[in-house]
Image (cartoon, rainbow, N blue to C red; front, side, top):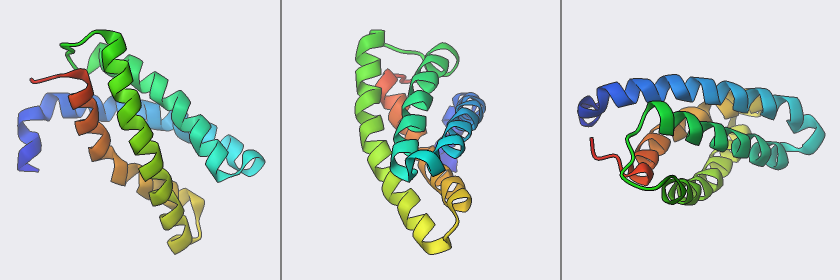
Length: 127
């Protein structure tokens, strides 16, 4: 946790934005996963959450030293890695616990720190 202390304010703002984005992601995912299956619902909810997250983080969390398009494409790259990693984690937790709600919560918690630091890098925020 000592590593996060210099980023305390950004981390707290990121946490608030993440709660908003996660709520939207969960609402979409749990509305669709029985209709579309876990993978399709995950990809759709993750994609919508990605766009919302980018918009809110650019406005409220990170200072960017890059153009919006460069930052977006970097975030897109990290998100492609993230969605792949998060699906593996979601699948693994669902296999272990046989409960998609628990799996989704644990996956979100696991991915939170990856998302904070990858977005900080993507935005080029050195503060």
